[in-house]
Image (tube, rainbow, N blue to C red; front, side, top):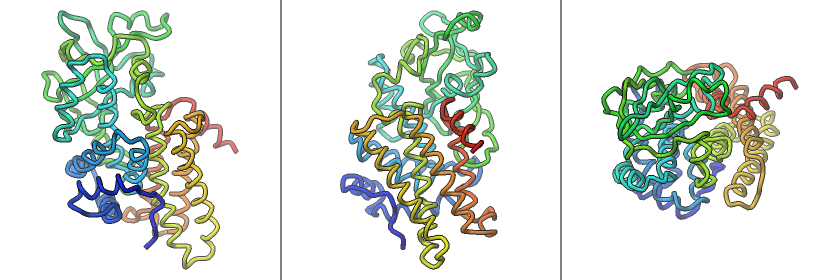
Length: 374
């Protein structure tokens, strides 16, 4: 058995064992990987696995070192589960950093007490569809609250969430968008069962279909002021990030998405190491990718603790590259068998492409486009 690249410290090991019926991290990792290969379609949303993983995350969330290890470890087992958990984490972070004390305590207790699922719909404020110049979700001010109209194009696990944390553009600013640097925006928490919330069928994705990701529509959905988390303010995502820790919800300035990318790469590299034991032609690439992985992990770890200051976008690009080339190397090593739907290598490659579009800021996307010319 190949030793996993991700090292687990005692605190995280104890938390994993406690919430997984006494089984060690290595045993649960095997289960996660087996579970990952069996996920297919929105109907296989891993609710129980998400709940168990959320409990572990809550146990180590106050420890930056453990939390980074946990994200990498989880992604090395099942990227679908990791992605779903990242959306729950993003929702919690937006709630934790809000200045609405009543909403903060009430919602955190409701979500964290039983490790229920919450998710976000905010990509349309930062990346998705911005080139169209028309806000996909607007908020109109009314007495004691706001009325939402439109849609969040990308929401993960909407049908399985108790709460949706969504972003909207203030409707009174819409006509002035062309002349304003940035319109006012707000983030709010909405119960999934609120009147007017419609969970659309999930999208047919290239990978991670079991995440049940798709649009959520809002038809005259009323949001009481007590559930407004941030805003209205220009650049509400940036404003809500100011008090967040470095392991914030996936964003250009966060480390979580990079952690998940190298976690995903770890499984492919371990496969190459195992194959290289009997195939000398794979030894150089297996060793080289191991060294690159360890270097990138060390970089993320130092950035996470504040011991190293680097541009987060450049590290995200490097992490993406590692996920892409390690999974493609695994596919080459697997040969034709890897191109079958049933083989892990082909699935790893499809999943790695997700990092090119998920929470991928313009600077990272441009860096990838430029690298394709080399």
